[in-house]
Length: 398
Ligand code: MLT
Image (tube, rainbow, N blue to C red; front, side):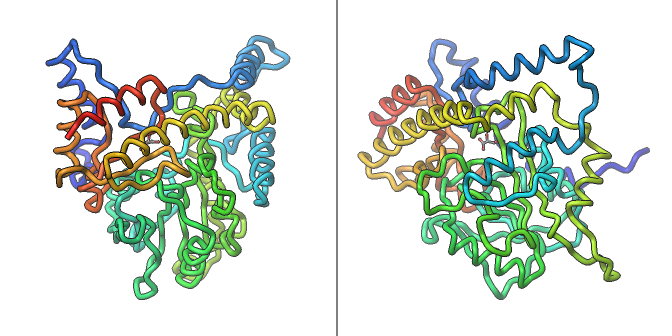
């Protein structure tokens, strides 16, 4: 009989968004005549820009002729895309070596897979509330997690505690689920803390394209010293509408060098490369061709048009919350609006209330951790029509 990984028994029974889908399916089955509006999972609704679509088609056409056909590509991603990503960073004043960029099928996979290159006896620091993937993937390996509290008092931007040692630190900014974004001084504190503790920061920048405040950093590598202590996960899911198309990247600087137990120096870039070349055969050429178009001038204009559309949705949601006197966070440099559940309801109670009374699906804060239990998340990724209708229904409640 195989010995199974019993750590899985320590996970919550189902992944947050599966539980939501289950409850919604149950509701729609019982109420087939009701129009349910989904502002729960952060899934985009705008079609891909025409420049990207054209490049995807060209990628398909390349597969039709023996001169341009592509078999296995480099596991790290095609050079043309790695160069395009590096140029995108350069445009934001951040210098990245294309060799440090590993293209993948998305940040969710990479933030989960990165656990492969670390030992199980690390002190892992994870903010609460947080994107559940960081927690679940560490539980799957049997790792112990130390939580740091994001609260309304600290604006859901917890800062390092110098009296607590950590080896691995997860940061997502702009944050999923709270929409809060660290400024440069705050990120510098985290970088200094990581350098002092010889820790590594796993920085999820999936929502960086939503930052409108030019003073806010778009990358951890905008902070001095970060290349010696941080790995960054980027995603085209929200930047370019690739939630279904799938493409992301991970930046592991070659400067990131740590010592093994017996004092041998190892490069995390080399370890991640070893991991990827063993377990991953690269993102398809067709998708990478489309992804490269995202970073062209025209492609980026189209992506930013979609982002502006979502931001207007965020503004519409925030305006109603303001009118109703509900305290909220996010929505300005982020597609997520995180607010206090009205009438002292707990988040799953409010989820059911909203579904039953207004047929709106949101995400209960409890799904992101203990500190989220009195909060609720709405996404700005719906269509304009649905967002307006949902908020009209919302305004009539309580
Ligand atoms: C979310 O709703 O939190 C996101 O869609 C999750 C993800 O990007 O995987």
